Length: 77
Image (cartoon, rainbow, N blue to C red; front, top):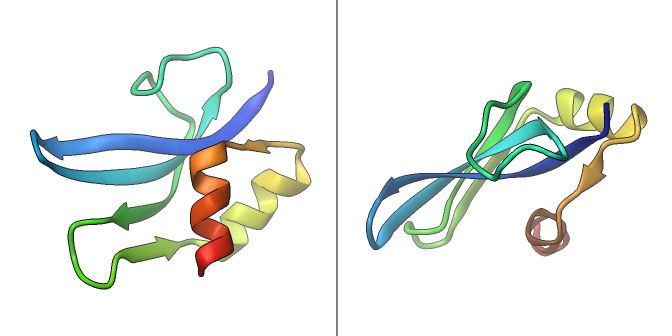
């Protein structure tokens, strides 16, 4: 199974928040996921990105591919 780390959108219209999840790469963006790795809230200033560092490293060591949007967020912090 190919696993990806990506953002799972939550929240209302014009008020998004996201979960950082480990998900099967072939599933839809908001399909069923394997595990929640963190949260991202872009609506607060400064934005809030909380990650379970140990679980993030675990999935990356297992070969999980990081999505483009999440990669940009990780570079900023």
